Length: 526
Image (tube, rainbow, N blue to C red):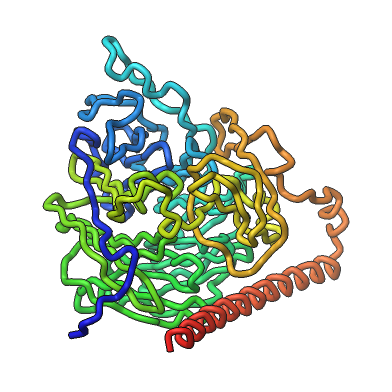
């Protein structure tokens, strides 16, 4: 055994569960057997898949803190009847909060639709007053995704109003919410149910895990089949995936053929396996969460209430510690990094769903210093998107907008200082290639929607959300002109192939950069 202890500023990180009165009790968690996290969080609110009669529903509550009572005077023990988002006609399977708007949440349901909701001001006023009556939320927009169930929903990390959905058609669809009548990109080729999906930091690449035991990388804009595919974990039970920032790696969790729970690291250049670590032989699905501190959190579900966390360095996962609990967790999510308590040296916060309760768990670096600890708080993603939906689907790239948690100053991933902003905002890592100046985009309020089969999310800035202009006379010009139509189809096919080739080269470059960084580090360590 080595006599030397590996140096790490996170070696003594510990999990601190908030007092019972700081969380929520009498929570009626959905009994749906669909494999999702059951809970999602913005910096202000959490959403929980709810058990309700007469269709599907989810609840919206103020995000609890492990350090103090919940805001808005919401009681610890929830009333039996609370305001719900209940327009879905079948159980809600997943929810996701917009990274650019803390009051905007999307929900996916077995009824084949995705609905958008905005948390109104005053939703929690008077909860403890006599004669209080709950008023349910109403959706502001609707997307008819599929005739089959929609199992996952995910917001694009940097482009405004871009949403990804995974459905029972075994495909992922990307939507521009300014024009939800049709998907802008469809990612095909899955042989069975999609179990998990994740964007890279810039949102140009999307990775999925599937019940057919394959891991797939897609060019999110080009659509079509995967540009990379490899065999994942050998077991058929739930596999999850998360992107590991700008390291050129992804992390997956799953099961071996012998039902061992595993965590794996894969390089994104060729989807080769870098490392596979056996965890144990429990039955619950493992939920992976990555933070920009280089820490991978693993939430153990079903019979296990523990959370393990590892520090990633040079393609190795170093076990830090384990937060132990006797209360099994049914689901989990993490608070956006922009909202952690820097005064408490909190580097991450988990929200854990048990059978009837939700509790907050703070992961803290034990330090006595009262000043801002810059070494444990790298810049995090700002809430200001870098692209409009139209710019994203047109292929434009832009550097990420990051925020300094000490003073709220916004910088781009290329190092350009922008205008100051509030300290709290969402968190990835800088993208490797430099790019043009960022485009500041405000997320305007969305307007109520008419009850039609497809509803459009309208904003005060239609130019920012509308797709590129299309000439209305083109169909008329092509009508009846078979050679010209064939030529257009041929050129479109060549364009799709060219985009896939470009993405393949980009993935190879990312792999080479990651290997170069590793080699440079090895030389420095000599």
